[in-house]
Image (cartoon, rainbow, N blue to C red; front, side):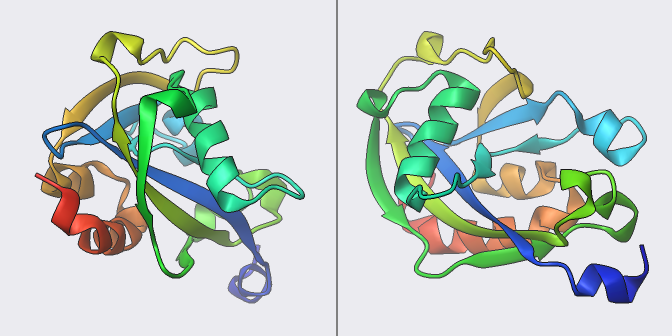
Length: 167
């Protein structure tokens, strides 16, 4: 796709979830499909996120996505906050055609901060359609370093917005 064609594409509506534990550390998970998406081996640690279904509100989408990806039910979290605005990021040009059938240039995201009230053994990545291979609790600085470079700026913004609640 040409840069002009990519620039004309819309952003995909999406939610992101910053799940923190009692110490203010962030849940980070390793994507299973990173080599396929990027065309080469890459460690792609990220926070849970996902698309918003038609007619779904962002808060409901965040709770649904969290449970689908991690097995963490709404009963195991406390909603602490959300970003005041939608945040956007663009995909790298060489990735646009491989993700979402080339229909989006990137994502516009509403981020939610949730405190995890459960135990670590209640997190279950073995889902019907697994997205992650591993997970860990990490600091905000580690999270920013662990994310793929094209998402790093949006992660910095999310961390700054939620910084008062983080370790």
